[in-house]
Length: 121
Image (cartoon, rainbow, N blue to C red):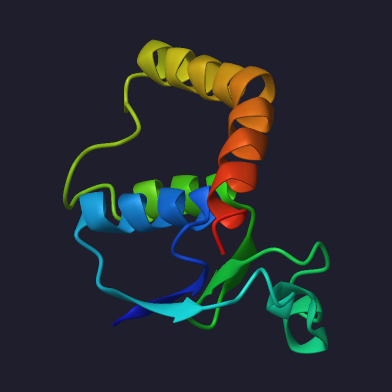
């Protein structure tokens, strides 16, 4: 079964999910959504994702890049690279680090990357 990932190849959000799929050895097709043209704000996307972001789709609609990555890491835990620890304490430390990254570093880094990359187009 091939999953579908919607996004822009330069989007750090789409890249996070793509890296997770690659590390888990999960086949997927990439559907380009042009951010510059505002395709992610089209009504067909907003029906499934009210924030105008992207989702993976294969009968199960899930949005928000970290939720998608965690879902894939758990669903395909027995294949590819182990991404989330199984030990309770190790998993708690993993979640702690993920929260620090999400709330302290990512907003600034993503903003800087977005501005730098999309000013090229």
